[in-house]
Length: 375
Image (tube, rainbow, N blue to C red; front, side, top):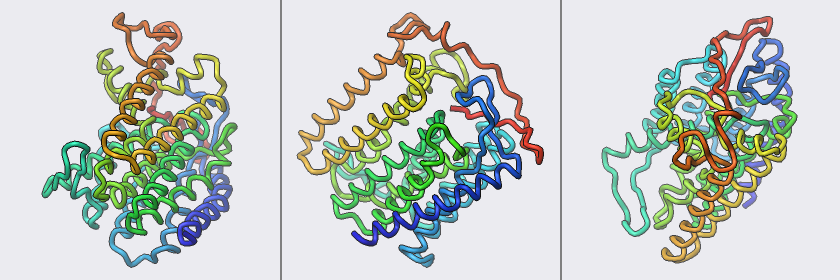
């Protein structure tokens, strides 16, 4: 246990120490997120927080493993690529298809270094050996998790808090199910790195993680789950990371359905995500984030609960969780009732007009750049 605490504390200490340094650097470079039509914040906020998160994670990996293990090398090299690519996206506002290609390239680092989903353990079905399908399945999983964290990064501290809750869930699950020590150490390193950054990112945020941070957090969560939970022989192994990431997965899935039903591009931004709905119901930023923390924590506890029960009881827990998420989505007005724009509790046409497209203006040394989250 001391090794896991050591990894967590090293990551947290490095992240806490480097975040103010990165913040000053962001000001000097003009790497600022200036408010646009969809923004909740009103003043320019420094980006590049993802650099501190990555360096905290990397330091903890070096402390726990050294740098000689191929899986760790692949995770860190892929992480470097994702962070650099995320900074480029913050700077240039890359097109969605370019961003997707970059995420696929980051996932390929894991595949090349042997971090792959080789077997799927599905309740009531059993184990499925993927064979050559391991490569595309791993890439799809990594890209999907990277995007769900990236897309939920809409309020101060939201993506960082949910990522840390998911990482702690994976850590406890690894210890519960006696997974290889590497999976628990990786989860501890990620949890520490994000928790160390969170005090600077919670409302009112002094710095944002940027796309570099949200994409790295999602990428690292995917990598940790591949190295740990998804390699577990337990019948519910696949369900644990899905529940741990249940809130951002639900939010992203509903966003895709909403845009598809409305005949809009799936990559188009809007103000109809769960956190926007909570703000529209009268919650302030902090309260909305705390509600989503509680929901994410409840999903994490549910994920841990099913690892120690029979398959039938696990399925009953999953059914209850699914019904609860359905109720939550309808209560805050995220599910249509069949009339197009009218949803329970919220009228989307009047309260959430489409935001005008923002021209992709890069940063400059004078700090004139714009950056718009596409969540």
